[in-house]
Image (cartoon, rainbow, N blue to C red; front, top):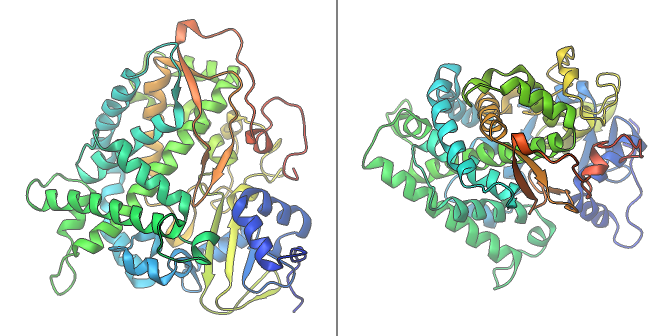
Length: 466
């Protein structure tokens, strides 16, 4: 078979230079490969260590075959760091362990469990909105992270960490920013003061300790019908329950996935609405007179979220490790090769989504893509277990916010992407809350590389190859 196409190695640093360029900006590097080399490309030409595949059929092939393509995290994380952690969660598991853990967690995310969450979400959202002062700027990204962290802890673990939300949130952010597989950690795993490796070890231990304290508190009192109770009650065939380390591993994954994805999507959605006055007006009309809980049934909000997730998926790329040889697009994929799929590229297929760079929520009145053509929550055995919860949460939060305020970025604010394990707005993003009745007649355009990803103002610029 012919070698995979791809760019030449970096002139001075070879393949490692390409790897650094990808790590520095995964969205831009992946977009370049998609446009220049087609449906299959290596990190470099002929690469058998990291291959990028694009399109619905490749998404289906890679994401649904959990026996051949394993989730990448446990393979990419250095062994020294694996030894430090107290446990692992769903995103790190494969095979029978993953299926068993998912079976335990699933009941807490079934539709019948959603009703008891709606009131909690609305109450915590109201608390956050009450803290805003009309006309006074605040950091949108910090606010949404604080709120979704409180929601995740309350709904999943039965604990309101209002006093600790900022500190726990910072730990999660530091862990995401450092990334287990970052070059500075992979190539310099030295436990010395000031090194990224030391900082990562420190934050892992601190976050594990914080979550272990939640487990300790629940073991000694309370049996609320939430996710943590399901985990505490789980028993294997020999009647053994999960150890504290196993519980901490699951809580870490659910906490990160359960609040960071929602917080970034909420921030993106509010920024996009601020720049699209017609869509904002339609939302305000639709939710007028509704309670936040009732906004969970809003078709208009549903379309806004779908379009936000299409343009700015929290996980723009999804990586798998081939554990057995395979063939993709006529190219040999050896065991050990990291295979990357791209929601970001998939969601910009103009045949499925006309004017793919425009924010057009109305497209969802008729759009019916398959699960491999539109996959903000992934697909296959590792599809996001909390997708229904996230949709409920985000619609209620948007309803709670927009029923009282419209948020407008401070003039001159750059809005850019920050891509680690997930993609989120690079903070801070200062916004000003205005009462619905006092919305400014003019909103200044935002700068930053959001304009590389979304055609905000119809200027038809060349945007990352589209």
